[in-house]
Length: 79
Image (cartoon, rainbow, N blue to C red; front, side):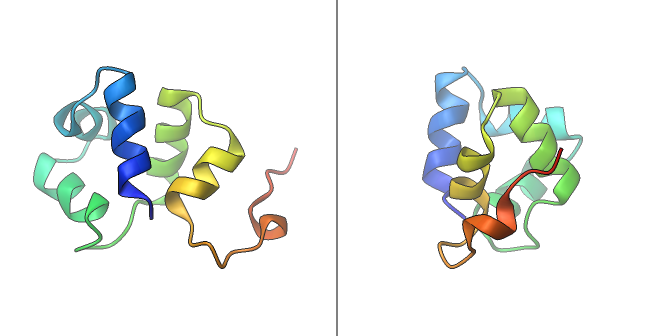
């Protein structure tokens, strides 16, 4: 996960970690654990909510949430 890219996107939209945590319906400490990869990662529904909130492309989602080793074929959106 590229936490720095997510934090940059949050800042450009005027959001803090607390703002995004509230939007996702999780507490701030849970969010912190997820973004710092100290707990389980973001769920699929959380990733989709973040994608929607910041109007992210599929490529941006891949850059933020998925390791470099995942092929682009495996991360393409389906219609």
